[in-house]
Length: 328
Image (cartoon, rainbow, N blue to C red; front, side, top):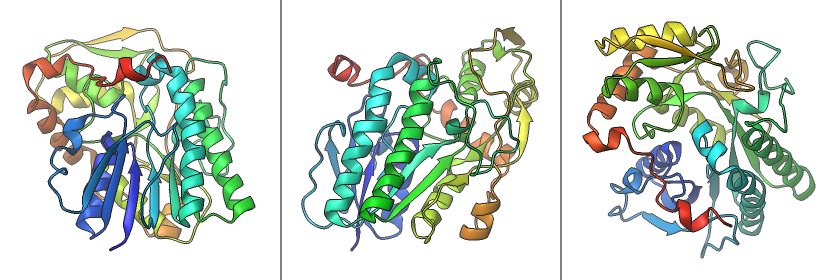
């Protein structure tokens, strides 16, 4: 049985990846320090005979006993509310944490897949965004701690690939959604759905003309899985290229949930991208992958998950170990 290590396993994507690999017959070792991950996301995995959990901050030295065949590095704050509140931890997990993961992969002769992001493109001047686009990023802006952590992460990964011959993969993840997202993590889908469930008006920043594209989590996980087992080591966009403006999306959410919320407008945050849409030509050609779940189907599943939360969870922002790590 091959063994895979997933960092950030209690996060939204990390937990779904653990499900996937266990279903595919792998032994899964998960690491998380719960600074933004949620223990509930992996509670159903704890009894599984082929799942092992380690609570650890990966910016410290990582030691895994025995063979290790694959590593998926998904540990990182991933939403504006997180990386604006814990900027130093965001930079450290993208730099020190990535260095530790790559060192472990080298020691174990394991293939490693690094979770990058569409944020490496910044506020793009090219549309849709191809993997060859270098981006338009403000390194000292409020989003810079996340953008530059991920850009450094890619550079470090390629350095290990080129200098040490490490077997590496890089996925650039575009907006992904589905069950187990934190309702109050600041991203547009949980933000809108949380406001609907709390009976609040929907907040649109700017005039709402900025665009996004949304990929359902099952499609995203399948793309990541295929990339890991491909023979392609350069970055690959995984996302849904169907684009929609934020204003139109707000209206769509209200209609989909039969809500009666109004739409209110606030100032656009600094460096908020005006366009975000992946060119997935490489994913189609190299991985034979493209998203299959349409937005209406995915949104219904996601809203059903949020509706199942307890009333008090509609207001919570969970940081189980925030105080434990914030001063480090």
